[in-house]
Image (cartoon, rainbow, N blue to C red; front, side, top):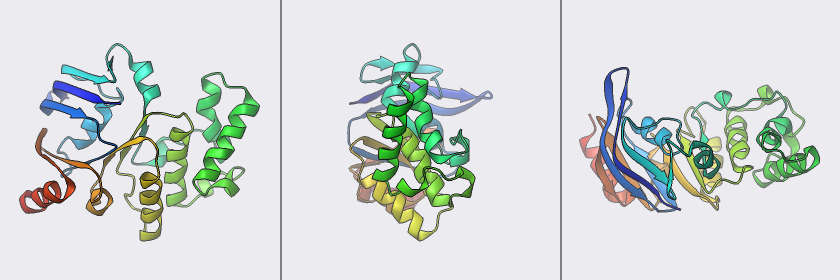
Length: 225
């Protein structure tokens, strides 16, 4: 499944955030790096219609994010930087089942799929736990599982390892590595994307480097302020 951005621009509060973005994303693992305020998170939000372009078009497998937003969001799941923004229900299993129930899946089927998704990511013993009692890493995995249970074809993750200790960063890294879906990851954690197929560097609203990880990350290290 490909994502095509055609001369995309975004302006927020009268300030240009992205300008002249032309991209075709087809690889299974794509990293996006850049300094704070560079526009990388806005770029990520364009990919499933959370942000709409002021100029140009974004298409996911031919679906326009402006006019076919619902279908785009079924195809592209989004994992937020702060899992607290994504956890809706107080109990872990209920939270994972919520999206399934929302699209009309019977309760028993939704619960079964939720339990299977939790088990697949090492959270099978936590289904009845209050979500607020989870560790930071467990909450981030819960946010990821709540997206994956909806079976999107692409998963976009915004800073998934921020504020996690080494053990939990490794858990998230392993979860991303094991995904069957395409993964597009925004991150300051350069090691996280070092074995990806492609890395984009965003600076002042433009793509300034687009290459294999070794070359793109070298450019970033040498040129960031």
